[in-house]
Image (tube, rainbow, N blue to C red; front, side, top):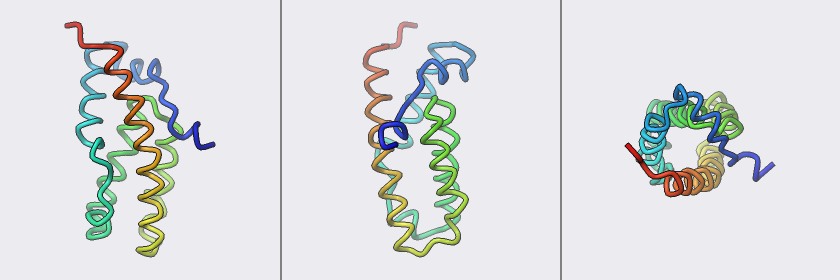
Length: 118
């Protein structure tokens, strides 16, 4: 299960971007800019509203880039966020960051292997 959560289907992600490599690459860059610094625990715990926006953005962007399993996991966190205690929220953020780190590495590797050509 652990490996599956950080799987990125780059073909699917490219398809989400109308099979336009330059557009997909731009989406991947935006994703990395937003989520390469991993999620800040204290910032999310400070405001439920900010947390829901950040988690929802992560859910949407990970689906767009082709990380569907991770996106579903993020969606589950999003749905139960309001009912969690602070300690449970910290645990969820650590889980998210664990897989986010792995997804980020794969996206970075993909970008390195597929340099911008236009």
